[in-house]
Length: 147
Image (cartoon, rainbow, N blue to C red; front, side):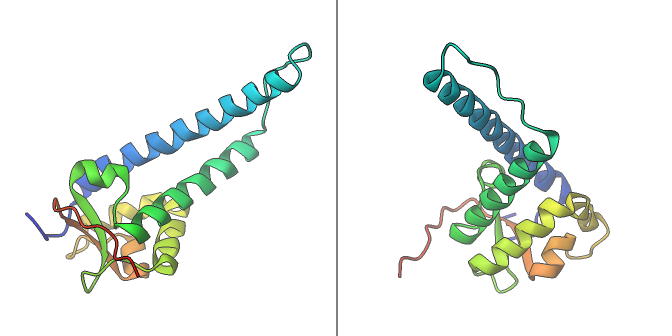
């Protein structure tokens, strides 16, 4: 399977792990804000009550940053590492930061686009088509090239 394009099941599983990490990070930010408020004003402490829009916006930005940084550096996020997947360009090279950011924006804005790989002959999602990338099985560790 090494080097072959990944299917929808392994990609959904990797993305579920990544989403759980982002949600855990969001909870961590909430706890850090609450702890800071408590340390600064312990007698007047109240739990933060962020709006739904603020939570969704922060979560979406965290997701985009997490995906873009992982894909631009090693082609992997934690979820993709666990499942032995890597995001690469069509030529097999790692994505530039701009392409990784574009792919991350599409994935975060249109997560249902992942299911296009079910009908695609090349197992390509909407984000893969737009970013000219693909997700392959790759269990060999590759460190980013230092310039």
